Image: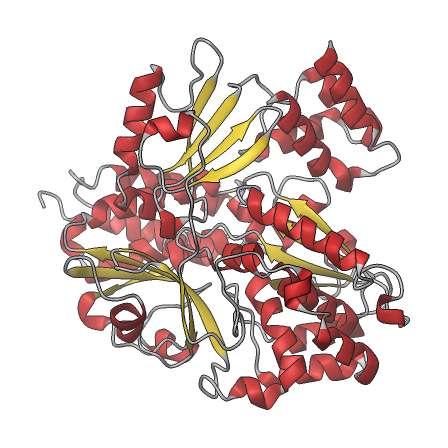
Length: 569
């Protein structure tokens, strides 16, 4: 009875809100009760004026929500490639054996539910888990050394491993703690923009710097802002895409956890440049610590007059709201992210129209990656020429890369574009663990390089010429003791699990790809050709980037190691 009263109080707080409040209220209910029961779902439907079928559609779409009772503690164990290399299978097997359950099951006493999970963004600390305790919330757990630490509630220390020559992101700052507003400063770049620059001049400076999106798409940032500002009608929206769910990628998590005010200042500069009064930071649901840190930073900035009405005494006003995803890789696609904020399933939209004219709530929107926004304050403070002193003509500035797998120092590194992959791995990362066999660049949607191909320069143009991609900056290293068929199998399961199902080429293609990869130990005659046909079909016919790149790693492996796919190998 007390629980039902508490749930009623939670839902009542959202009276007068619209559908866009659906994810926040579901998160509160899920955290309090462990699942969304039928009575509460109906109450949410009536309060937000959302059809009950849509409520269940959203709950079923996101992996961190449930409409069925689960254990008091739900443990999501990552089984993607980096955690696989770190021995997560034995940890998961031991945990299930100790509790007498299989993955997906709840113990007889109702205390624990164990689930397999896709990447949790803790690849440098693998193996990793996400622990959700009813009434308490969620926390990341990495590294998972044994099953007992997962069950007793302890949280292992995990200082971020960062390196390189920090010029833009951590200059003169110890990156292994959360920087407060007092330590960060009074948003000097924003102050300079508001008092000395027009919105047009801000976007022009960013455009002159050559800054392009750091989330993988590589679209010119200043140009995007110019297009958004020029779109007719109000309101405009500024959105930060912090749904970092690509296996092997964790740089944005490190930025949010350690320099939250850098991100907020970059987001406000974007909002000023496009003349937006409203901004959102959409953070993946598997990043509870990052979300809490960003909420604290927003409160600090509001108290200091750096957020809200008439910022710094000027006519510019802007609010910032955090939204947490519910566990869906597809929401990293910009239009699927808009759908999630609006309280819907994260289905990508058909483009055109583009977000710069028809984005969030069908209004002009600029959406940028965490790292992209974090580069902006230094550009506005120091000028475009300062930023261009690093990198190349086509790849300007610096770039964060997330390195995991078989290197001695996995972590986040800031590099100047032009550094070779070998220099990164043998220098900054202190060399390989074992004999290198393959490097996957660009994350799960990237492509493989052989050990003899790693002298390639880390630039957009250099990697493109080598037939690979930088993507969001993920670099995963595999030594010769690794069976690459197991890596491909894990990638296949990831894409099959994360396909949203909106378009058939991806929905069916990822399932068929996974089935073939599951039998690679004993492939059937013609499996290589089947994988190639499936991959090319997905690449050409899928609606969004997920399906278009879901076979990229497999297709590159087919070219470089054909023997892996041969019957009788």
